[in-house]
Length: 291
Ligand SMILES: Nc1nc2c(ncn2[C@@H]2O[C@H](COP(=O)(O)OP(=O)(O)OP(=O)(O)O)[C@@H](O)[C@H]2O)c(=O)[nH]1
Ligand SMILES: [Mg+2]
Ligand SMILES: [Zn+2]
Image (cartoon, rainbow, N blue to C red; front, top):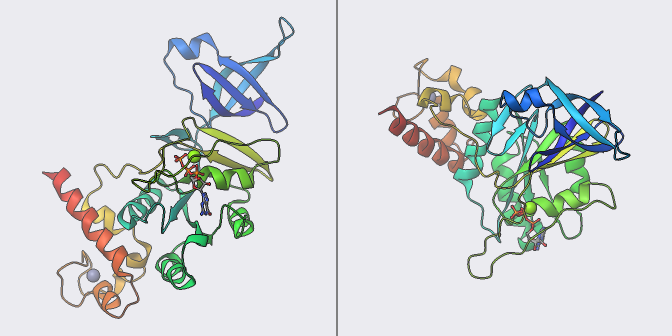
């Protein structure tokens, strides 16, 4: 039978076959070869009905289109980058790095602004403005569920994970999206630091139907951009890609070159300043790796 690993805890795996979830283990040869199984793997498995307890044995991995090591998940085709503007504050360089990491890994990025009840319409609007032309955007209130229908529509038919700093409301959003009767634990925000407390500790996938899978993950705050050269980082910004053909130099880095279409767009307010700042920071970081 074919199913997807939806959870793994201490050597046990939970496999979902489209209807039900069965707990089981990896076959001995997988373990001997130290082949790691990732949550998200599509696997071939057998039901072992031995002593009345329905368990399963995983024979092999059938499909692993991609995988990430931190957190360890596979077959992800969409990443929802969740951030709040207040409690905790938005950290735009971190957000932009996650988005660039998605571009690099071939994962479709989505932006979700959370806790919109804590900010004014103007502040929400200025945040929407940064990302609206680049990626699908949803704005949600996790307390009331407002805006979640839009997010649901965006992720339908995809394997999507929620990423972003602790405390932005990822698990709260997950609880709205998953069926009644299932739920995940949510945390509180520290009064002192305004940060979350890393409540979610395991990766768990929820099958939402319509071939939609939602990954709830801990600590998905960055994607590796390790060893990305500045030239590659340049290619991870869609608003640069659109305009690069109009720069005077074909290999323009959009930093100090004359007649640069990206800098012109920046000055005209067509490219967002905070995005451009993130780009500068990321290329500086990349230069350090090159040394
Ligand atoms: N005001 C407000 N609070 C929210 C909203 N969504 C979530 N919260 C609260 O924010 C706190 C953190 O929410 P979680 O869903 O646990 O956050 P998380 O992103 O899963 O955090 P980690 O698991 O630590 O990564 C909880 O106290 C929620 O009740 C919202 O839209 N508005
Ligand atoms: Mg959580
Ligand atoms: Zn340029």
